[in-house]
Image (tube, rainbow, N blue to C red; front, side):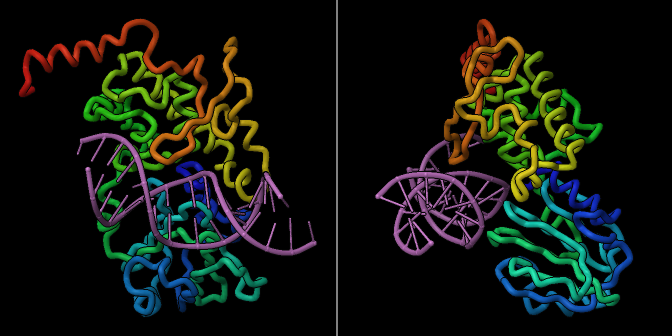
Length: 297
DNA sequence: AGCGTCACCCGGACGC
DNA sequence: TGCGTCCGGGTGACGC
């Protein structure tokens, strides 16, 4: 399922062209739009989308969180792939794809197909990205996402780490796979409360999150291959989908367990991802003490 | 505020 | 073989 690394890969390949996704979309002009699953179009209405897009040229392709962002002449086209979505550029006479529910036909005959077997994907055409993306948290792989930024955001909540990492307003682009991988790399329990992490644990989580995402990027968002074409990405994963198998951490004797947290399958090692850090959870103790002394604070 | 639950979908895995 | 059933993924809505 596409998360930040996969979505970034799709955006880059649409921008640069690739064997998997066809030639670049940049510079092409939209002439027509076929809508076969109207509920996919969030804004404007499905019948308004073609006249709205007609004549607009694709200027840039980028990503924000898990959303692909096409800058057009007058508007912005936003595509959320959700679980099964994919975007490809093909010639107009390419074999039909029964899951291509929305097709953007270019004036030069090529077309951009949004293929989405499970029909969870969403499309917006808006004048301003903020209309859709305003609620997203920071980009976790950007330079200004420092461990101090993460520390502050963790302290602002009293939530379990796993659902917090999945919350797109907390940090943008992390999904179930990379959340489990980051927590395993960091040696932190998925149910650990966000405001109890020690400074070294925060730093470790920050490093682990960025490492997990950057590893995914280096594999060209290979979890798409894993999901769709049986590629080898599962060999890269240390926690996700490995229930019952030996923990990969050097020296650890544990086995990966699967639990359900907030309706999501969650994979972790009960040996090296303890509920609390080694020793006393002094941050939680201090927080309780200060609350007793200053109930209003 | 944070948690649980449901709805949205359907390919694939599983049991019989 | 073919049928029925369940699962899971991201997100938003809703209730507590």
